[in-house]
Image (cartoon, rainbow, N blue to C red; front, top):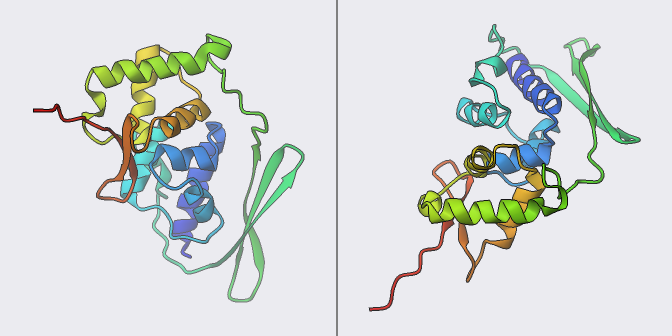
Length: 207
């Protein structure tokens, strides 16, 4: 792994933790399998490319992806280790790099609070929030929003704008799961970059 790649991973991790966005939720928003971000953060998959960083920037409410790119592009190859430990209601991440002389240097240490009891009723209307978000999905569907494939991030931003507050991501993930499949409202597909999208299933009228 290069020094440049480590810096990108660190900046994305730091930003998502600061925003209170779990690895699974970031994966969901950018249209990837739920373990996608965690796999990258555990060094078991290639680092994000610039196209992905642009979508991540939108998900984490940054103006653009430039803030994730190191000022200096250092391509030195490093041996990297990262440890993730759960202590109480927190994850602790320790990243170290090794020199050619096998000396270990601490690269970064981060901690993340764990949402152990997700509240599906989060929002100004409390326990009625699921019903409100469901009705909002029906409304934007009637406005033809889903006639083209939509990333979860696009749906999330549209609903937030329509309702006037940020909806709970657990709620959105749950409802999209309910409404997807044969005989339901949406079909789940993949775009050109192999990201999950949701599109309305249009029923052809009988002649």
